[in-house]
Image 1 (cartoon, rainbow, N blue to C red):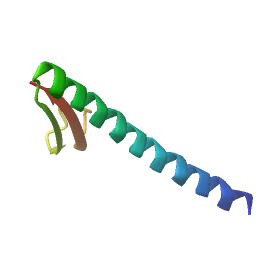
Image 2: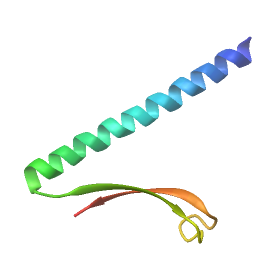
Image 3: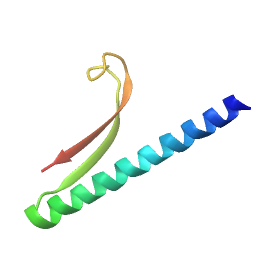
Length: 65
């Protein structure tokens, strides 16, 4: 039973972390766009050559222009 609860808490924590990261990113993007005229781009892609992490892996970038 304890393993089941531990797994449930891990799932909730991961979900909360993703949601809070998105909320922070959206808030910061709004500040930069509204006050400084910047454009914020979120890029999700796949690094086939393994240049970023040393092996092929999903990557995410936040770019401010």
